[in-house]
Length: 175
Ligand SMILES: [Zn+2]
Image 1 (cartoon, rainbow, N blue to C red):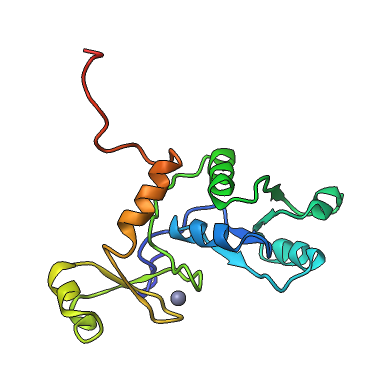
Image 2 (tube, rainbow, N blue to C red):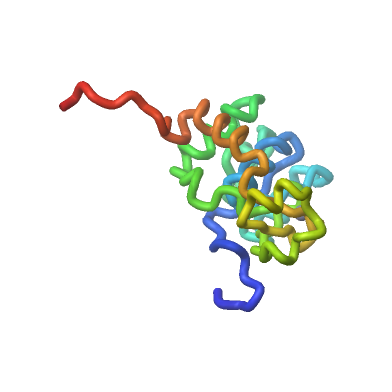
């Protein structure tokens, strides 16, 4: 993993393939840095085929896949709500939510590449350029990400899910 244009961090495993009912979950897994393909056009059979071909762990809400004896590795996602879905996946696989946070494009699933501050001079608002020091770019859609992009919102969600420790937890007492 020493290519010149290597991604900002090493991609954590596993890699996922989300079925058409799990678009929001797919985006959240990408926010956490997990390589997550989302192919809503695929039928259950197509999902099985792609999961096998790309060696991705399938995430599905489709009970038909559960009943197939020839299905590749999959997780049946219990809930309709993305928070519970995310919690299920993190708990089941013991994922580390902060390990590779914000290293992947939420739209394209591409690993972000670090770019220098000078490179983005003309592409970000002045105050962003003045206040931020780290920038990453999606090699596919060219979208720029920087430190504060959605960070507070995302951390708040993760905290709500109990996936991130409260930073200002009350101390004392236990001695
Ligand atoms: Zn992108």
